[in-house]
Image (tube, rainbow, N blue to C red; front, side, top):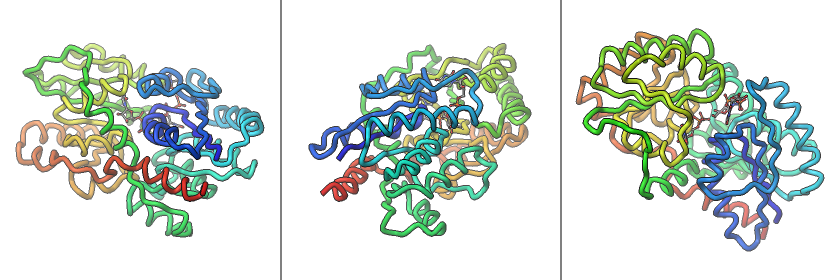
Length: 364
Ligand code: UD1
Ligand code: UDP
């Protein structure tokens, strides 16, 4: 069976790497890897770490790319790829523009797709934007829905997807995390060992503009009030984030702004952190498994499991909320202990194995 596996951005590569590596070991599977390279540097960082070389690379990224142009260029390029490759199955992961455009192209070419991390929903098309729309659209086209949790399976059933097309696999991000966390990891950045570390990431499109400026104001206040705490912020290269973060936080002595970290040092940073402030989807999934509280810079999340289990809390982009909730976790030991219990609601590290089993049954 000829399987074309698609990755476009950093999180897709992290979460697809375990699937690629597991399928490559199967004698019945002929695996081809397509990098759309919607991200360039951040995608390459991950592929290098997992020792994966794409068979096809569309090199699609442009500085500050618009969603419409990105989608149109992906669709055009996918015609050539699908005609040349003629895959039996295409696998996509998550909710990026790459996933949505590739799924649509496969639908037009009548090629079945498997959707890894299927069924996440906020039921609000504006949050996260455009990801909620991307996964709803992809969900309409998918032949196999690899849902990370029971609640994502329920979301798919609610949309009328037949149960037999859904498999609850766990999120493959935990496979990648466990593969990585057992290595000897080096953060590679000088951190004062005696001080607590707060790790920060932020890149959501719906936060661009004033919400992101509020987030930066809150971080600046927290850094001023807590000179004994270090803040490490690997800044996403999207110019809407990077320029503002450097302008507003660059002068704070205890905020370290750095380029995106390679995956292994980032896992080391999560391990080393006291708590994490982030709007990332992947980080919401990884941090609970490492026993690290996350304050999420969003008003809603398609990953409710960790919120329900009280190890992740939504704080939005509200200045007061970010400052007060962070300060509480710094000052209140009981509150901190409650959020750092070390549970893994999103997976057990065997997601890729379950995906392989479903495809193997189809190939037989
Ligand atoms: C994309 C996804 C988002 C995902 C995020 C993970 C879409 C619409 N958005 O957001 O769902 O959560 O990736 O990080 O699919 N850039 C670089 N180098 C890189 C990567 C990006 O310079 O390696 C800059 C470029 O200027 C690029 C811009 O970031 O144009 C935006 O990249 P894009 O993939 O469109 O959106 P993200 O905000 O990264
Ligand atoms: N990550 C990384 N380096 C960084 C920041 C994040 O390797 O500097 C990893 C993180 O461990 C997680 C993934 O990137 O697995 C999350 O990607 P991102 O936040 O860009 O996207 P999202 O998950 O929100 O779609």
